[in-house]
Length: 592
Image 1 (cartoon, rainbow, N blue to C red):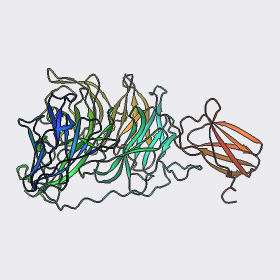
Image 2: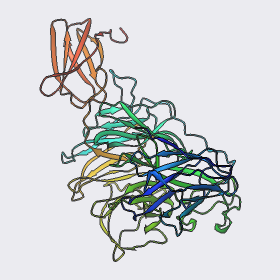
Image 3: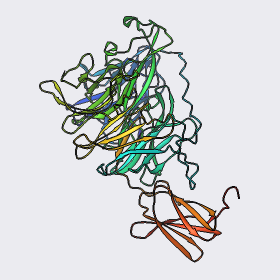
Image 4: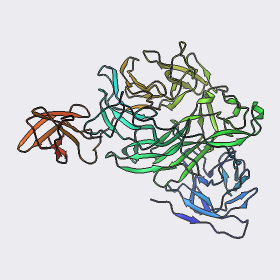
């Protein structure tokens, strides 16, 4: 359903919209408290920001007033959140750059001493954005050449290890940056393609995986353009027939970044944005007219697009926690945090990873306050032997409270004996101790300087994507043995993360067929991109029919005699017809 618009009463110029709310207990929050976003810790909100109130019944509002220190009072409209636990105030006009905005709620505000909240609006910067990455022209080397689908051009996959003990499911990767087509890709344990969706132009795919949306299995990925490490794009959601069902965008004028797209059981999405704002960096030895990159975390209701939560790293994480020096040139951007993952902690709060502080942070969801730090310069935990990590990615919290992550270790090559690791760390929150449970290294001792992922699997195993310049994916069993290992064949291909996940789908359309005369016979190549239930192919030509078992993504069936045309049926394991191709004319062999 779309959110209902509730329009506030505009009294006089400079007198603010008034709407009433009855206060309720929000899950995890205190009774009678309202959470306000942006909040007091926000130092660089956008001029077009809206104001979200959570923990309130929108039908009964107390007085709420929104006032800018330069722009004065703001009238606006109210958009009710679909779950009935809040509403968003949409100002009729933008806020002024550099001003402070006060929100008088008329009720207790979570994390504030009074019934009001405030935030700062970012100043204006004329810094030119970096150019977007350009897609490389696909080459033939290392690229799959499919007779029935010559338009796909995915990278080839070499499987180095496959013991047969891998977990159930296929491998999910987002193909990017290499000399192949770019896009989300699924392949099986033999390295055979299951599904590939090539993207147009310079678009890239990050964080491709299977998730659950409204209790249904879906495919999700971030899609957009990259400028070095900053993404500007959207979240894509497809159903189990590969049909688009939702597109998710960041709110408040931000671009959705590539680093995270996580769906929750409540039908919401957790995502982030990278935003450059002007900042005095002189206390850090940088320029007084510098530029800093704020990282913004948002929770968006997928169906309506409503903003339910917003948190800014700038103002909560100290700039002094970063291991990155501030640039002395005012034209260069300081990237002190570099958030790269968001997760729901086991208690419903949020877990975020900041690469450039070498730390993981737990956030209180109602206020955005820090609950603890793991790692970095101000760790809340005593770091036990082997638990220290650097430049990490993909931090998650297991139901038992353990933290899993991908430890990049270093961003400097050559490796000089350094190896990236998949880590599992146990936390004793009472005694504030972190203990190493398990570390996983690649048998070849890989060092991955960027990107990467660590996915715990049922049964105690783990699936690791080695990221960046290491186009390798590996699976380990509960004992740490390598049970699967594969890599991309094409030059320069990367995948930000990699996953092992079950996936069953009904492919759209019809099977694709290419039929060619071959000597005195006919060769028929057939595939059906994304179909997971095909067990065999039946090739019909006139009164003749030949059935062959499915042999990878593309199966080639040899027929005796020259045929004029063929029709191919896709059969399931019981021999039932799933779909039938269009009639395909047999072509003469090239060069004849």
